[in-house]
Image (cartoon, rainbow, N blue to C red; front, top):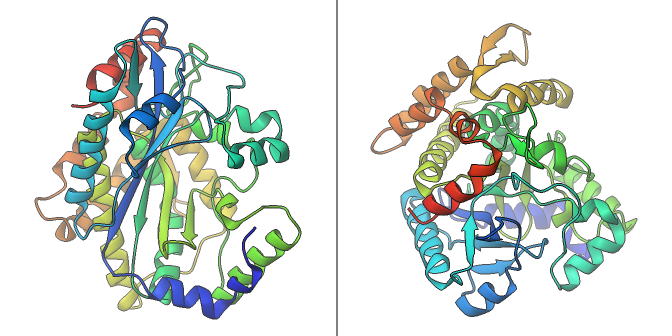
Length: 364
């Protein structure tokens, strides 16, 4: 249980002002599968064999997580992620494989949970719903070194969750069938509370009160159960972006991470100039969010203020153009993802061939 005394506005400001501005850390969730069936396998043995503090078991027994160190350069963060993938692949039993799948393409229904106290506690609270959360994301932690800047960029990124989801959408299949969505992951996650578009945080005082209310009433054991697609992370003092599907290759991960990092830098600069708009209502962002998970980059989004219809691709290209000056080496690799979205390749493979392909490209 989190100490409620920690959840004061002054303490929160201290945490989010105590970071080093411009630093970044990454987390990605991966699945272990049997090569003969491509169905989930236990990750516990592999985690023990690798014995690396950056690699830990996740909630489902077949899932593990890589968590990088804090880096000043997003390229270095992705390079560490790539080394961790290679380490896991080298240690993997010949009958097993690792895949970066936002949703397992063949599985539906409850899966075994890890033998951890956290998994047991969540199982008690959320029952079978928690066993259905076989979902994997790429999580990007961004530090701003200032509490007010953190909150300002939180609201700016919150407006852009649909665009980022459309760019990263890579989960069309579930239970061997095409869901008709570019990413079915948020539909599965939405079975739990505190998912999707996060609320407006009017002040650190309001955030502290909301967190304390939920913890005091035992709605959550600690604020880590605020599973929104973007959240201020109390332990690290970062903004944690959670809207992104995990990517099949670290090459695609690199493009998205560098773009998000550059976008955050641009939004920080706009905040300093007083150029960020007021936060949009959650339901408007959620409306765009639905379009993004259904149609990906090929859909339309509504302007959050005027309601004007705009092509999602156009929205993304404008964001990329605006962020490019903050990205050494440019963002042409992100433009490739917009014009040739990964979900198209997955659909061309079909549900039965996705897991073998993911295993083939995992460490590449």
